[in-house]
Image (cartoon, rainbow, N blue to C red; front, side, top):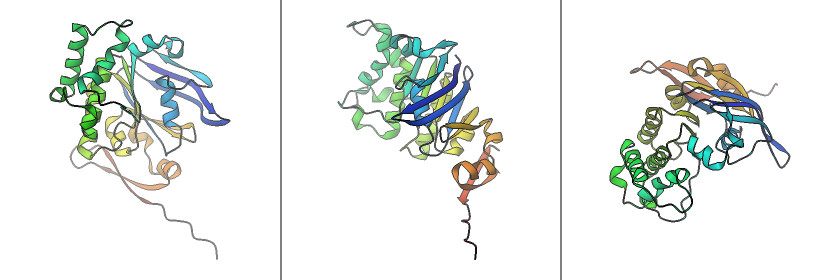
Length: 261
């Protein structure tokens, strides 16, 4: 299922956070959004998963205006992992994953055998079946992300939005989470801080700076030393990964300009 964002603008309290953004995510693609802190990545993604209504522009899912759909219908088609998922109560893992079934239930309907099967299958798919009876708050960061991905899979959407899904995870957990997302087969748009993870796992990248898209394309074509110097303020060296041959970036500081004498 395609995600199409056209001429999206977000203004809050007189500040323009996102300006005239157009973005395409093809069916089954994993598309990354990268940019410095405060560039507008999260504001853009919040419009996609309907936590924020854009000031102008449209978000279409499979050709239909996402913001014109009912909340239930939108949630059946698109799931999201926001940057911060706060659990006020210590639900069990089973209860957290079961929340993904709410868009498929009516009113106060009880959990059905179909719901339970979908939850068990989702937990198994992310390798977290053994955590089913654990309290969510007792889990490690990587375990929590796996459970939240299971919740999204139990929702049985066609598209997935993730805002910095690898934050606060160690290297092994980062690789595991992105592999799970890739293997889901869903249409995915994600914001990522780590440019090397973005280069390896994403089909396409969009670079956002001060609320505008300044570059887009395949990672190798987008992540050039010139762009990285301009947008991120770093000097980048592009090398081939010794194992896979994939693009890998090494960074150091740009030399500061010396005042004229």
